[in-house]
Image (cartoon, rainbow, N blue to C red; front, side, top):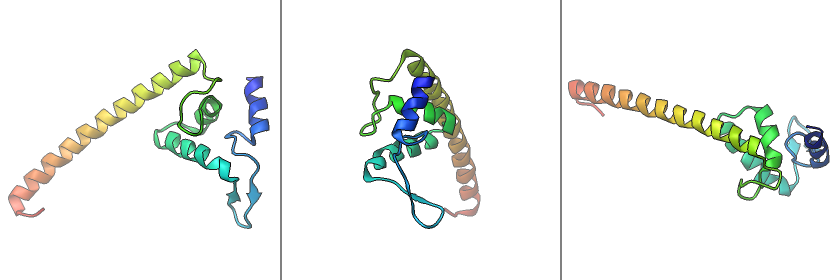
Length: 115
């Protein structure tokens, strides 16, 4: 874990975005090279990962394509497989919810001739 903390400090914080300059309001301006990393962070948040998990796995990912870097470990691969299984379950739940909505829409449209 010490190695990860050293990497975070050297990379500019927990997400490795580099030094941020205050923009005058509550936001920060990051260097152009941080764009790919920000995209990765947004994708991981959208996948349902929490910030502590994202900070843990970012050093193990290449920014350009999200592939594994030399820091990726077998333990990380196992954790990511678990996250993928969770996402797959969420997708299944969403598909079932959509099917229920489709049935309700179809039934309502048949009674009122709308849609």
